[in-house]
Image (cartoon, rainbow over all chains, first blue to last red):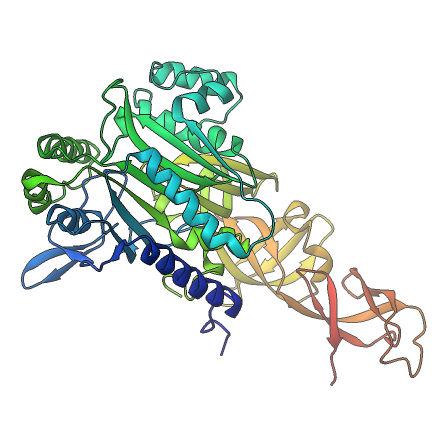
Length: 321
Length: 189
Protein backbone atom coordinates (compact mmCIF):
# COMPACT_ATOMS: atom_id res chain seq x y z
CA UNK A 1 0.00 0.00 0.00
CA UNK A 2 1.26 3.47 -0.85
CA UNK A 3 0.59 6.83 0.75
CA UNK A 4 -1.46 7.94 -2.25
CA UNK A 5 -4.68 7.99 -0.22
CA UNK A 6 -3.38 10.87 1.87
CA UNK A 7 -4.04 14.54 1.04
CA UNK A 8 -1.13 16.40 -0.54
CA UNK A 9 -1.96 19.55 1.38
CA UNK A 10 -0.97 20.01 5.01
CA UNK A 11 -3.41 20.37 7.88
CA UNK A 12 -2.14 23.93 8.28
CA UNK A 13 -3.50 24.93 4.85
CA UNK A 14 -6.94 23.54 5.77
CA UNK A 15 -6.90 25.81 8.81
CA UNK A 16 -5.93 28.79 6.68
CA UNK A 17 -8.79 27.96 4.29
CA UNK A 18 -11.30 27.76 7.13
CA UNK A 19 -10.11 31.11 8.50
CA UNK A 20 -10.31 32.74 5.06
CA UNK A 21 -13.89 31.51 4.55
CA UNK A 22 -14.92 32.91 7.93
CA UNK A 23 -13.15 36.14 7.18
CA UNK A 24 -14.95 36.53 3.82
CA UNK A 25 -18.36 35.88 5.39
CA UNK A 26 -17.71 38.37 8.17
CA UNK A 27 -16.58 40.99 5.64
CA UNK A 28 -19.77 40.71 3.59
CA UNK A 29 -22.07 40.38 6.58
CA UNK A 30 -20.74 43.71 7.85
CA UNK A 31 -21.51 45.25 4.47
CA UNK A 32 -24.98 43.76 4.15
CA UNK A 33 -24.14 41.62 1.13
CA UNK A 34 -26.36 38.54 1.09
CA UNK A 35 -24.82 35.07 0.75
CA UNK A 36 -26.63 32.96 -1.87
CA UNK A 37 -26.39 29.50 -3.43
CA UNK A 38 -27.32 28.77 -7.03
CA UNK A 39 -27.35 25.53 -9.07
CA UNK A 40 -24.19 23.91 -10.36
CA UNK A 41 -26.14 22.10 -13.08
CA UNK A 42 -27.65 24.05 -15.92
CA UNK A 43 -29.25 23.26 -19.28
CA UNK A 44 -27.36 26.14 -20.83
CA UNK A 45 -23.69 26.93 -20.68
CA UNK A 46 -21.12 29.61 -21.24
CA UNK A 47 -20.32 30.25 -24.91
CA UNK A 48 -16.80 31.63 -24.31
CA UNK A 49 -14.55 29.65 -26.71
CA UNK A 50 -11.77 29.66 -24.09
CA UNK A 51 -13.89 27.78 -21.56
CA UNK A 52 -15.09 24.20 -21.79
CA UNK A 53 -17.95 23.02 -19.58
CA UNK A 54 -18.30 19.49 -18.17
CA UNK A 55 -21.38 17.77 -19.51
CA UNK A 56 -23.69 15.23 -17.95
CA UNK A 57 -27.20 13.82 -18.57
CA UNK A 58 -30.43 13.76 -16.62
CA UNK A 59 -33.88 12.73 -17.90
CA UNK A 60 -32.76 12.58 -21.55
CA UNK A 61 -31.44 16.14 -21.28
CA UNK A 62 -27.91 17.38 -21.40
CA UNK A 63 -26.78 19.40 -18.43
CA UNK A 64 -23.60 21.39 -17.91
CA UNK A 65 -21.63 22.01 -14.75
CA UNK A 66 -21.14 25.74 -14.31
CA UNK A 67 -17.76 27.35 -14.94
CA UNK A 68 -18.86 30.20 -12.66
CA UNK A 69 -22.16 31.01 -10.91
CA UNK A 70 -22.53 34.21 -12.93
CA UNK A 71 -25.70 33.55 -14.97
CA UNK A 72 -27.86 32.35 -12.08
CA UNK A 73 -26.58 35.16 -9.86
CA UNK A 74 -27.53 37.69 -12.50
CA UNK A 75 -31.05 36.26 -12.57
CA UNK A 76 -31.19 36.86 -8.82
CA UNK A 77 -29.98 40.44 -9.31
CA UNK A 78 -32.65 41.07 -11.92
CA UNK A 79 -35.27 39.65 -9.55
CA UNK A 80 -34.40 42.26 -6.92
CA UNK A 81 -31.98 40.37 -4.65
CA UNK A 82 -29.79 43.40 -4.03
CA UNK A 83 -26.06 42.90 -3.32
CA UNK A 84 -25.13 39.21 -3.26
CA UNK A 85 -22.10 36.96 -2.91
CA UNK A 86 -21.49 33.26 -3.34
CA UNK A 87 -18.72 30.81 -2.56
CA UNK A 88 -19.06 28.05 -5.15
CA UNK A 89 -17.18 25.09 -6.52
CA UNK A 90 -16.83 25.56 -10.28
CA UNK A 91 -15.67 23.21 -13.05
CA UNK A 92 -13.59 23.65 -16.21
CA UNK A 93 -12.49 20.93 -18.61
CA UNK A 94 -8.82 20.57 -19.59
CA UNK A 95 -7.49 22.91 -16.96
CA UNK A 96 -4.97 21.14 -14.82
CA UNK A 97 -1.49 22.17 -13.78
CA UNK A 98 0.48 24.16 -11.26
CA UNK A 99 -2.17 26.89 -11.07
CA UNK A 100 -5.19 24.93 -12.32
CA UNK A 101 -7.42 22.17 -11.06
CA UNK A 102 -10.52 21.17 -13.10
CA UNK A 103 -12.70 21.95 -10.09
CA UNK A 104 -11.91 24.89 -7.87
CA UNK A 105 -13.44 27.29 -5.38
CA UNK A 106 -14.66 30.66 -6.48
CA UNK A 107 -15.88 33.68 -4.59
CA UNK A 108 -18.17 35.78 -6.73
CA UNK A 109 -19.99 38.94 -5.73
CA UNK A 110 -22.09 41.73 -7.20
CA UNK A 111 -22.51 45.29 -6.00
CA UNK A 112 -25.36 47.51 -7.18
CA UNK A 113 -24.45 51.02 -8.28
CA UNK A 114 -20.70 50.25 -8.27
CA UNK A 115 -18.57 50.84 -11.33
CA UNK A 116 -15.46 48.69 -11.80
CA UNK A 117 -13.24 51.14 -9.90
CA UNK A 118 -15.56 51.14 -6.88
CA UNK A 119 -15.48 47.34 -6.96
CA UNK A 120 -11.67 47.34 -7.15
CA UNK A 121 -11.70 49.52 -4.02
CA UNK A 122 -13.84 46.95 -2.27
CA UNK A 123 -11.61 44.07 -3.41
CA UNK A 124 -8.65 45.89 -2.00
CA UNK A 125 -10.48 46.22 1.31
CA UNK A 126 -11.45 42.53 1.26
CA UNK A 127 -7.92 41.36 0.59
CA UNK A 128 -6.51 43.61 3.30
CA UNK A 129 -9.14 42.16 5.62
CA UNK A 130 -8.18 38.58 4.72
CA UNK A 131 -4.45 39.30 4.97
CA UNK A 132 -4.78 41.30 8.18
CA UNK A 133 -2.98 38.63 10.22
CA UNK A 134 -0.01 38.92 7.93
CA UNK A 135 2.91 41.15 8.84
CA UNK A 136 3.95 44.06 6.69
CA UNK A 137 2.24 46.26 4.17
CA UNK A 138 0.24 44.97 1.27
CA UNK A 139 0.70 47.05 -1.81
CA UNK A 140 -1.84 47.56 -4.58
CA UNK A 141 -1.26 49.06 -7.98
CA UNK A 142 -3.71 49.94 -10.71
CA UNK A 143 -2.79 50.21 -14.33
CA UNK A 144 -4.82 50.20 -17.51
CA UNK A 145 -4.27 47.40 -20.04
CA UNK A 146 -3.11 49.97 -22.57
CA UNK A 147 -0.65 51.64 -20.19
CA UNK A 148 0.81 48.31 -19.08
CA UNK A 149 1.62 47.36 -22.69
CA UNK A 150 3.02 50.81 -23.43
CA UNK A 151 5.24 50.77 -20.34
CA UNK A 152 6.65 47.31 -20.85
CA UNK A 153 6.70 46.83 -24.60
CA UNK A 154 6.20 50.33 -25.99
CA UNK A 155 3.24 49.20 -28.03
CA UNK A 156 -0.39 50.29 -28.06
CA UNK A 157 -2.54 47.16 -27.66
CA UNK A 158 -5.67 48.97 -28.82
CA UNK A 159 -4.27 50.29 -32.10
CA UNK A 160 -1.84 47.52 -33.12
CA UNK A 161 -2.81 44.61 -35.34
CA UNK A 162 -1.67 41.01 -35.03
CA UNK A 163 1.33 41.50 -37.32
CA UNK A 164 2.58 44.48 -35.30
CA UNK A 165 2.21 42.46 -32.10
CA UNK A 166 4.18 39.60 -33.64
CA UNK A 167 6.95 42.00 -34.64
CA UNK A 168 6.91 43.44 -31.14
CA UNK A 169 7.37 39.94 -29.70
CA UNK A 170 10.32 39.30 -32.03
CA UNK A 171 11.90 42.69 -31.28
CA UNK A 172 11.72 41.91 -27.58
CA UNK A 173 13.22 38.42 -28.03
CA UNK A 174 10.03 36.78 -26.85
CA UNK A 175 9.70 33.10 -27.82
CA UNK A 176 6.81 32.50 -30.14
CA UNK A 177 4.67 29.46 -29.41
CA UNK A 178 4.13 26.81 -32.02
CA UNK A 179 0.70 27.12 -33.65
CA UNK A 180 0.12 30.88 -33.38
CA UNK A 181 -2.54 32.22 -35.71
CA UNK A 182 -1.00 35.06 -37.65
CA UNK A 183 -4.28 36.98 -37.83
CA UNK A 184 -5.65 36.42 -34.35
CA UNK A 185 -4.87 39.63 -32.51
CA UNK A 186 -6.28 38.45 -29.18
CA UNK A 187 -4.08 35.36 -29.26
CA UNK A 188 -1.00 37.56 -29.57
CA UNK A 189 -2.24 39.90 -26.84
CA UNK A 190 -2.82 36.90 -24.56
CA UNK A 191 0.66 35.57 -25.23
CA UNK A 192 2.36 38.93 -24.56
CA UNK A 193 0.21 39.26 -21.45
CA UNK A 194 1.39 35.88 -20.16
CA UNK A 195 5.10 36.12 -20.94
CA UNK A 196 5.82 39.80 -20.65
CA UNK A 197 3.18 42.00 -19.02
CA UNK A 198 2.25 39.65 -16.14
CA UNK A 199 5.89 39.08 -15.14
CA UNK A 200 6.43 42.87 -15.06
CA UNK A 201 3.94 43.33 -12.21
CA UNK A 202 5.21 43.92 -8.67
CA UNK A 203 6.37 40.51 -7.40
CA UNK A 204 5.28 41.02 -3.81
CA UNK A 205 2.16 43.12 -4.31
CA UNK A 206 -1.20 43.06 -6.02
CA UNK A 207 -1.92 44.64 -9.39
CA UNK A 208 -5.26 45.56 -10.92
CA UNK A 209 -5.25 45.62 -14.69
CA UNK A 210 -8.32 47.40 -16.04
CA UNK A 211 -10.04 48.49 -19.23
CA UNK A 212 -9.33 45.52 -21.48
CA UNK A 213 -9.62 45.75 -25.27
CA UNK A 214 -13.24 45.60 -26.44
CA UNK A 215 -12.46 42.31 -28.24
CA UNK A 216 -11.89 40.77 -24.78
CA UNK A 217 -14.92 42.34 -23.13
CA UNK A 218 -16.54 38.99 -22.20
CA UNK A 219 -19.54 40.19 -20.14
CA UNK A 220 -18.37 43.73 -19.47
CA UNK A 221 -19.90 47.00 -20.58
CA UNK A 222 -18.00 48.91 -23.26
CA UNK A 223 -16.70 52.34 -22.36
CA UNK A 224 -19.04 55.15 -23.37
CA UNK A 225 -16.13 57.48 -24.18
CA UNK A 226 -13.88 54.99 -25.96
CA UNK A 227 -15.47 52.09 -27.81
CA UNK A 228 -12.05 50.38 -28.07
CA UNK A 229 -12.16 49.43 -24.41
CA UNK A 230 -14.37 47.38 -22.12
CA UNK A 231 -14.80 47.94 -18.38
CA UNK A 232 -13.29 44.62 -17.47
CA UNK A 233 -10.54 44.19 -14.90
CA UNK A 234 -8.35 41.51 -13.45
CA UNK A 235 -6.42 41.20 -10.23
CA UNK A 236 -2.94 39.67 -10.09
CA UNK A 237 -0.75 38.67 -7.17
CA UNK A 238 2.68 38.98 -8.68
CA UNK A 239 1.97 37.47 -12.09
CA UNK A 240 -0.63 35.01 -10.80
CA UNK A 241 -4.09 35.82 -12.09
CA UNK A 242 -6.50 35.88 -9.14
CA UNK A 243 -9.74 37.51 -10.22
CA UNK A 244 -11.75 38.77 -13.14
CA UNK A 245 -14.42 41.42 -12.87
CA UNK A 246 -16.79 43.47 -14.98
CA UNK A 247 -18.74 46.64 -14.85
CA UNK A 248 -21.59 44.43 -15.98
CA UNK A 249 -23.21 44.50 -19.35
CA UNK A 250 -26.95 44.91 -18.74
CA UNK A 251 -28.10 45.25 -22.36
CA UNK A 252 -29.94 42.06 -23.37
CA UNK A 253 -29.56 42.68 -27.10
CA UNK A 254 -25.83 43.25 -26.88
CA UNK A 255 -25.45 40.22 -24.60
CA UNK A 256 -27.37 38.03 -27.03
CA UNK A 257 -25.23 39.25 -29.93
CA UNK A 258 -22.05 38.38 -27.99
CA UNK A 259 -23.31 34.86 -27.21
CA UNK A 260 -24.12 34.26 -30.87
CA UNK A 261 -20.76 35.64 -31.99
CA UNK A 262 -18.91 33.41 -29.53
CA UNK A 263 -20.84 30.37 -30.67
CA UNK A 264 -19.91 31.14 -34.29
CA UNK A 265 -16.29 31.40 -33.25
CA UNK A 266 -16.57 28.06 -31.47
CA UNK A 267 -17.89 26.43 -34.62
CA UNK A 268 -15.10 27.95 -36.72
CA UNK A 269 -12.60 26.45 -34.32
CA UNK A 270 -14.24 23.04 -34.43
CA UNK A 271 -15.76 23.35 -30.96
CA UNK A 272 -19.42 22.65 -30.31
CA UNK A 273 -21.75 25.63 -30.06
CA UNK A 274 -23.26 25.77 -26.57
CA UNK A 275 -26.93 26.19 -25.63
CA UNK A 276 -27.40 29.90 -24.95
CA UNK A 277 -28.94 30.88 -21.61
CA UNK A 278 -32.28 32.33 -22.75
CA UNK A 279 -33.45 32.77 -19.16
CA UNK A 280 -30.49 35.03 -18.47
CA UNK A 281 -31.38 37.07 -21.57
CA UNK A 282 -34.99 37.27 -20.35
CA UNK A 283 -33.73 38.50 -16.98
CA UNK A 284 -31.62 41.17 -18.69
CA UNK A 285 -34.66 42.19 -20.75
CA UNK A 286 -36.71 42.48 -17.58
CA UNK A 287 -33.96 44.72 -16.27
CA UNK A 288 -30.79 44.01 -14.34
CA UNK A 289 -29.68 46.85 -12.07
CA UNK A 290 -26.53 48.79 -12.89
CA UNK A 291 -23.78 46.85 -11.06
CA UNK A 292 -20.27 45.46 -11.05
CA UNK A 293 -19.28 41.90 -10.28
CA UNK A 294 -16.11 39.95 -9.77
CA UNK A 295 -14.99 36.35 -9.32
CA UNK A 296 -11.86 35.45 -7.42
CA UNK A 297 -10.16 32.05 -7.37
CA UNK A 298 -10.00 31.14 -3.71
CA UNK A 299 -7.47 28.33 -4.11
CA UNK A 300 -5.04 30.71 -5.77
CA UNK A 301 -5.63 33.28 -3.04
CA UNK A 302 -4.73 30.53 -0.56
CA UNK A 303 -1.61 29.76 -2.58
CA UNK A 304 -0.57 33.38 -2.12
CA UNK A 305 -1.41 33.34 1.60
CA UNK A 306 0.50 30.13 2.26
CA UNK A 307 3.19 30.75 -0.38
CA UNK A 308 2.38 27.44 -2.06
CA UNK A 309 3.98 26.70 -5.43
CA UNK A 310 1.33 24.25 -6.63
CA UNK A 311 -2.44 24.34 -6.31
CA UNK A 312 -2.41 20.76 -4.99
CA UNK A 313 -0.70 22.11 -1.86
CA UNK A 314 -3.83 24.03 -0.86
CA UNK A 315 -6.64 21.64 -1.80
CA UNK A 316 -7.49 18.45 0.04
CA UNK A 317 -7.39 16.19 -3.01
CA UNK A 318 -6.43 17.01 -6.58
CA UNK A 319 -8.85 15.85 -9.26
CA UNK A 320 -8.23 12.17 -9.95
CA UNK A 321 -6.16 11.60 -6.82
CA UNK B 1 1.36 9.03 -38.09
CA UNK B 2 0.56 9.04 -34.40
CA UNK B 3 0.45 12.40 -32.68
CA UNK B 4 -0.47 13.90 -29.33
CA UNK B 5 -2.58 16.96 -28.63
CA UNK B 6 -1.26 19.39 -26.01
CA UNK B 7 -4.03 18.35 -23.63
CA UNK B 8 -2.53 14.85 -23.56
CA UNK B 9 0.87 16.23 -22.53
CA UNK B 10 2.32 14.84 -19.32
CA UNK B 11 5.67 13.89 -17.89
CA UNK B 12 7.30 10.99 -19.74
CA UNK B 13 5.41 11.45 -23.02
CA UNK B 14 7.70 10.94 -26.03
CA UNK B 15 7.54 13.46 -28.87
CA UNK B 16 9.41 14.03 -32.09
CA UNK B 17 10.66 17.61 -32.28
CA UNK B 18 12.74 18.81 -35.21
CA UNK B 19 13.43 15.19 -36.01
CA UNK B 20 14.77 14.31 -32.57
CA UNK B 21 13.01 12.10 -30.03
CA UNK B 22 12.29 13.96 -26.81
CA UNK B 23 10.65 13.13 -23.50
CA UNK B 24 8.48 15.60 -21.58
CA UNK B 25 9.96 16.43 -18.19
CA UNK B 26 7.48 19.08 -17.19
CA UNK B 27 4.33 20.46 -18.76
CA UNK B 28 2.91 23.73 -17.52
CA UNK B 29 -0.48 25.01 -18.59
CA UNK B 30 -0.47 28.78 -18.90
CA UNK B 31 -3.95 30.11 -19.32
CA UNK B 32 -5.51 33.48 -18.71
CA UNK B 33 -9.01 32.88 -17.31
CA UNK B 34 -10.68 34.38 -20.36
CA UNK B 35 -7.91 33.92 -22.88
CA UNK B 36 -5.92 31.59 -25.06
CA UNK B 37 -4.25 28.69 -23.26
CA UNK B 38 -0.60 27.79 -23.87
CA UNK B 39 1.55 24.85 -22.84
CA UNK B 40 5.07 25.58 -21.71
CA UNK B 41 7.00 22.36 -21.90
CA UNK B 42 10.39 21.24 -20.67
CA UNK B 43 11.77 18.31 -22.64
CA UNK B 44 14.84 16.16 -22.71
CA UNK B 45 16.27 15.47 -26.14
CA UNK B 46 17.26 11.80 -26.10
CA UNK B 47 19.93 12.23 -28.74
CA UNK B 48 21.78 15.15 -27.22
CA UNK B 49 20.73 14.62 -23.61
CA UNK B 50 19.98 18.34 -23.44
CA UNK B 51 16.97 19.90 -21.77
CA UNK B 52 15.02 22.33 -23.92
CA UNK B 53 11.95 24.48 -23.45
CA UNK B 54 9.21 24.88 -25.96
CA UNK B 55 5.82 26.58 -25.99
CA UNK B 56 2.72 25.49 -27.84
CA UNK B 57 -0.61 27.10 -28.36
CA UNK B 58 -2.95 24.68 -26.57
CA UNK B 59 -4.76 22.39 -28.96
CA UNK B 60 -1.72 21.92 -31.20
CA UNK B 61 -0.79 18.41 -32.24
CA UNK B 62 2.76 17.16 -32.06
CA UNK B 63 4.10 14.04 -33.72
CA UNK B 64 4.69 11.16 -31.36
CA UNK B 65 8.16 9.60 -31.26
CA UNK B 66 8.13 5.85 -31.80
CA UNK B 67 9.92 5.35 -28.53
CA UNK B 68 9.25 2.39 -26.27
CA UNK B 69 10.67 1.23 -22.99
CA UNK B 70 11.63 -2.46 -22.81
CA UNK B 71 12.96 -4.33 -19.80
CA UNK B 72 16.15 -6.08 -20.90
CA UNK B 73 18.94 -8.00 -19.24
CA UNK B 74 22.49 -6.72 -19.52
CA UNK B 75 24.74 -9.38 -21.06
CA UNK B 76 28.20 -7.95 -21.59
CA UNK B 77 30.27 -5.02 -22.80
CA UNK B 78 32.77 -5.69 -25.57
CA UNK B 79 34.49 -2.35 -25.17
CA UNK B 80 32.52 -0.78 -27.98
CA UNK B 81 28.90 -1.77 -27.33
CA UNK B 82 26.81 -2.82 -24.40
CA UNK B 83 24.69 -5.86 -25.23
CA UNK B 84 21.20 -6.33 -23.81
CA UNK B 85 18.79 -9.22 -24.22
CA UNK B 86 15.03 -9.32 -23.98
CA UNK B 87 14.43 -12.19 -21.50
CA UNK B 88 11.15 -13.07 -23.20
CA UNK B 89 12.09 -13.02 -26.86
CA UNK B 90 15.88 -13.48 -26.44
CA UNK B 91 16.27 -10.69 -28.93
CA UNK B 92 19.54 -8.79 -28.55
CA UNK B 93 20.36 -5.12 -28.99
CA UNK B 94 23.69 -3.32 -28.87
CA UNK B 95 23.74 0.06 -27.10
CA UNK B 96 26.52 2.59 -27.68
CA UNK B 97 28.35 4.25 -24.76
CA UNK B 98 26.29 7.38 -25.30
CA UNK B 99 23.17 5.51 -24.13
CA UNK B 100 24.83 4.64 -20.81
CA UNK B 101 26.53 7.88 -19.81
CA UNK B 102 24.67 7.93 -16.50
CA UNK B 103 23.94 4.26 -16.09
CA UNK B 104 27.00 2.26 -17.19
CA UNK B 105 28.68 2.41 -13.80
CA UNK B 106 25.70 0.84 -12.02
CA UNK B 107 25.09 -2.34 -13.96
CA UNK B 108 26.57 -5.80 -13.90
CA UNK B 109 25.71 -8.91 -15.91
CA UNK B 110 22.11 -10.13 -15.66
CA UNK B 111 20.90 -6.78 -14.30
CA UNK B 112 17.39 -6.03 -15.60
CA UNK B 113 17.45 -2.50 -17.06
CA UNK B 114 14.97 -0.34 -18.92
CA UNK B 115 16.16 0.11 -22.47
CA UNK B 116 14.51 2.98 -24.35
CA UNK B 117 14.29 2.09 -28.01
CA UNK B 118 13.64 4.57 -30.82
CA UNK B 119 12.65 2.78 -34.01
CA UNK B 120 14.32 -0.26 -32.47
CA UNK B 121 17.65 1.47 -31.68
CA UNK B 122 18.69 1.90 -28.02
CA UNK B 123 18.68 5.55 -27.00
CA UNK B 124 18.99 5.41 -23.24
CA UNK B 125 19.53 2.65 -20.71
CA UNK B 126 18.09 3.24 -17.26
CA UNK B 127 19.26 1.01 -14.40
CA UNK B 128 16.84 -0.19 -11.70
CA UNK B 129 16.23 2.39 -8.96
CA UNK B 130 18.06 0.12 -6.52
CA UNK B 131 20.95 -2.20 -7.33
CA UNK B 132 22.93 -4.60 -5.17
CA UNK B 133 26.66 -4.54 -5.78
CA UNK B 134 29.71 -5.90 -3.99
CA UNK B 135 32.48 -3.61 -2.72
CA UNK B 136 35.64 -4.13 -4.81
CA UNK B 137 37.85 -1.65 -3.04
CA UNK B 138 37.73 0.51 0.07
CA UNK B 139 39.85 1.43 3.08
CA UNK B 140 39.80 -1.13 5.92
CA UNK B 141 36.63 -1.02 8.02
CA UNK B 142 36.57 0.46 11.47
CA UNK B 143 35.24 -2.13 13.90
CA UNK B 144 32.52 -1.05 16.26
CA UNK B 145 31.88 2.17 14.43
CA UNK B 146 28.35 1.32 13.37
CA UNK B 147 26.44 4.28 14.69
CA UNK B 148 28.68 7.25 14.14
CA UNK B 149 28.53 9.40 11.05
CA UNK B 150 31.51 9.68 8.80
CA UNK B 151 31.94 8.16 5.38
CA UNK B 152 34.64 6.92 3.04
CA UNK B 153 34.65 6.21 -0.69
CA UNK B 154 34.12 2.65 -1.89
CA UNK B 155 34.51 1.34 -5.44
CA UNK B 156 31.83 -1.16 -6.39
CA UNK B 157 32.21 -4.15 -8.69
CA UNK B 158 30.48 -2.26 -11.51
CA UNK B 159 32.94 0.63 -11.27
CA UNK B 160 30.77 3.20 -9.44
CA UNK B 161 32.25 5.02 -6.47
CA UNK B 162 29.87 5.73 -3.60
CA UNK B 163 30.23 7.16 -0.12
CA UNK B 164 29.73 4.44 2.48
CA UNK B 165 29.83 4.27 6.29
CA UNK B 166 33.25 3.59 7.83
CA UNK B 167 32.42 0.03 8.89
CA UNK B 168 31.91 -1.29 5.35
CA UNK B 169 34.50 -3.84 4.18
CA UNK B 170 35.66 -5.24 0.86
CA UNK B 171 33.40 -8.03 -0.40
CA UNK B 172 30.26 -6.82 1.34
CA UNK B 173 27.18 -6.42 -0.85
CA UNK B 174 25.51 -3.02 -0.70
CA UNK B 175 22.16 -1.69 -1.77
CA UNK B 176 22.54 1.59 -3.65
CA UNK B 177 20.02 4.09 -5.00
CA UNK B 178 21.05 4.73 -8.62
CA UNK B 179 18.99 7.95 -8.90
CA UNK B 180 20.84 9.75 -6.12
CA UNK B 181 24.01 7.63 -6.23
CA UNK B 182 23.67 7.08 -2.50
CA UNK B 183 24.38 4.09 -0.29
CA UNK B 184 21.17 2.70 1.25
CA UNK B 185 22.15 -0.32 3.35
CA UNK B 186 24.15 -3.53 3.57
CA UNK B 187 22.55 -6.60 2.06
CA UNK B 188 22.54 -9.47 4.55
CA UNK B 189 22.65 -12.99 3.17
